[in-house]
Amino acid sequence: MFGAAGAEIWPCAFWASEPTEPACGPMAGDPSNVLMAQNLRDRETPLSGARQVR
Image 1 (cartoon, rainbow, N blue to C red):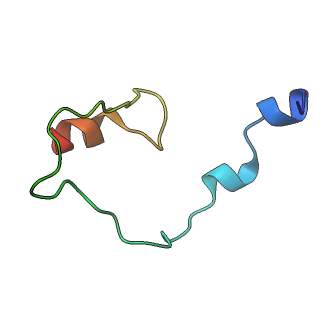
Image 2 (image 1 turned 90 degrees about the vertical axis):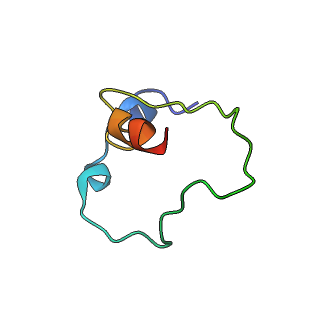
């Protein structure tokens, strides 16, 4: 839809910023059969986060 403009990593992806909401984790009563999609090279979905949640 946006061509090359949508394929670029914009500088704002690397700006340091505080989260707008606190992080949340699994709660008692949540289903245990959940698919977690994590990645080795994406800093937004680090593999270490999946291992900690597991």
